[in-house]
Length: 450
Image (cartoon, rainbow, N blue to C red; front, side, top):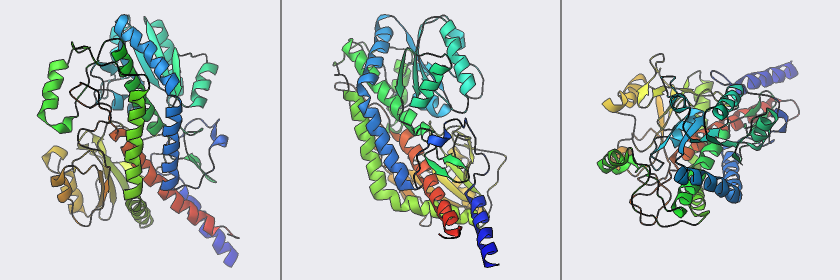
């Protein structure tokens, strides 16, 4: 009887460990090579640090491909676009600290319309973020790019993905490995295979590093691309956008930036902020994971409400454990098919604002009225927002500075290259990793002999 009870407990823990809700599956051909780590926020953080080091080690190759692209952009009148999942394309496109003239080669959200199809015969540099979940579609699309005028296509993906593309007969003019985990999912459990994705963090960190080197390569050719100012700096950012909306290069000749400088500065700033999050916020990350697991145990629902470029349409995602479902519908709007209940839990990951008031459809006020529990993850330079958080709602400080830009361009009027996108998804997956570790430990403890 006692042994039967132990086995029953183990089965219950297996069910608790299994993904739920919106978890997506991807190709399984590489699952056996996933890294056998014990899941935790700490382990995910350590992976990110290693990922940054791996990207930095590739700087010569990143710079070389950026220089080839810059020659086309400056001397051959090419344009530049980005293609892939929204966690990659929406992070690099129309973004504070990014390039103003970088456009989309993927469907415009909500329309199905593709910018690149309207300019088939034009000359384009296309940054491709490979997707595990839509592999065949991406391969077909890259083949179409090859038939549509002059295209310089750069592949961003894991080493395994880049090799697989070659096997599938798809080639790139240049490619750079993103240092994601071998199977994307970082942790392997007995029941589920690899869980907790790494590709969104890796692709975005690599994407901004590459764009930094691309901008620097432009300066060595005597041109400075127009760049967005961080919108949280005030109205001047919007006025500046109008001024340069259709301008490819500034009139003034820029300071020539040496190869490797911008990419290295971006990665150093990213690593420094991640270190701050680790050192100063890890306890709250652990507590958030524990609260989420306790809510799940009690039968409550777990949600994320996220506002950020990289977080748009993030679910479903290959190897997502499936603990959370998104409550947001789009930028500052909530889904209409969901209703919060007492003791539900919402992880709110944003920029520097709380999701309150008419601009956010009074989300925070309505969530509190329903009895839901909120935890916030925002950057805290806006003290009026921080002071508006009730004492019973925990805060994870994301630690980026106002303006959300990591690199100073000598003689340029704004800083460039944001880190917030990487930091937002890093905190999200660190919390998921800690939850997975808690549930996995329960499973292990329930197995006879442990």
